[in-house]
Image 1 (cartoon, rainbow, N blue to C red):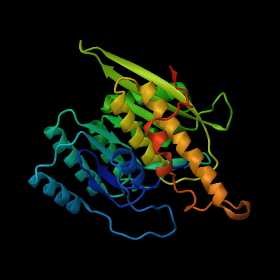
Image 2: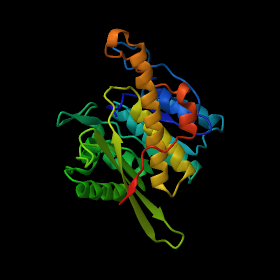
Image 3: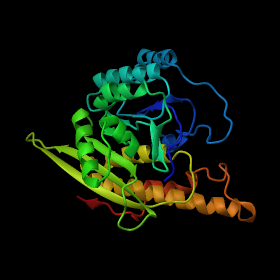
Image 4: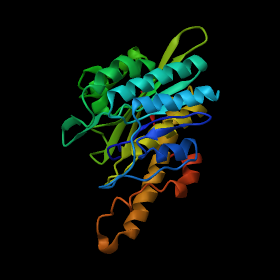
Length: 305
């Protein structure tokens, strides 16, 4: 899977606040709310970005109309420290309105290319994520580099990854999915490893931790919105299977596989003379993949560790 695209924060529930900026969250909206926003991933884009005051103003409107009870919140990319802090304030307020609300956070901060990790958001966002956002979240979906940033530890083996996920659990979230890693796969360099960990709280107060590993075939293309799509589908499938991370992740990753394979087939068919597909041709084929999103054939099996 390609690096995740830039996108805004959005709140999901019976209704949803507009994302800021209007970017690749259209993939999340399609999965969760059947809405559509403007496609991006191109050299140029226009529009406005919500600031923290405007976000609070939007939420105040929801409060005044009595429509501020949500079941789920999903947030992604933001570049502004004050905006991220405002998101925290709003999620805290929403959790007061509904104690069963599930907050899914994709802590988009950076990635690793050619063995070198780098942040593509301001560094002052990291302490906000560590101290405020992650402790509030129920589910987080970092890549390996982001998991290392949040934990302050490097990951060089599966055992170290599991230990890092334990540290992230201790910060607050019951579900942690490292969506991609550079760990070597026994199946070869064409495969990408993802790892998941879920703490299940039993009625008697005991806690059981389920850990899984998935190996996904790499796709030789750069897509926009794969991170948003992953987080949205994981939210949807953990809603259906709240105590079975294995099944939720298998359906999420299998649906991703179908969407990406359909997209690359269509893009190659459109590319003239065998040229590399353009960003426009690589727009995720969401509408065409509706059935695969709703009921994916399982093509990626998760291993319980």
